[in-house]
Length: 193
Image 1 (cartoon, one colour):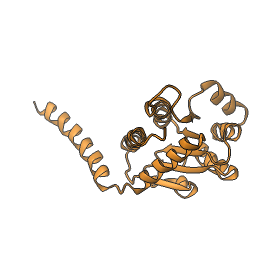
Image 2 (spheres, rainbow, N blue to C red):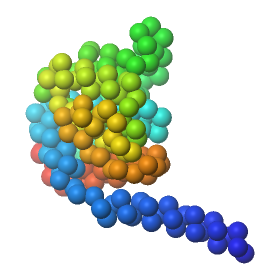
Image 3 (cartoon, helix red, strand yellow):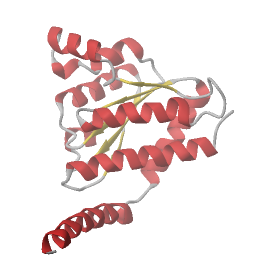
């Protein structure tokens, strides 16, 4: 019996930590990101997502939501691309030019001035995330970073950082999806079509 209560207490504690982050968040950065994404959608510009590990999975998930989930008609979604989605490209670039360049090399080919980059990172210190943020600056591509922990180097490198100061990778990754889903629902309701 005590094992069951201990397990339930563990889950309740996780839920409490997540609720505390949600309750303490000031949402203006998320609102601004939503507006910037809508501008890119209206202008037919591209929005790029990237991240490592769970954040890579979140990037791929969110690209699906913005490509299809926001559309009210066939072909009405956003032009979005997850730089973490193509294993052939990633392994080629990692092997030939280095893992730190797997996102920046793709952005250099696909990106154009006026596009938008959204990086997802728990620590904000991954070399490939830092490098793609640096690459975006050289191309005139505005960048947002959705970050946990201290925000790392990405907090100051991104044009705008949405930072959740929690030392918990899973809750940091939960917040990436929560922010993405909030924006997806807002964009669906504020569809520029």
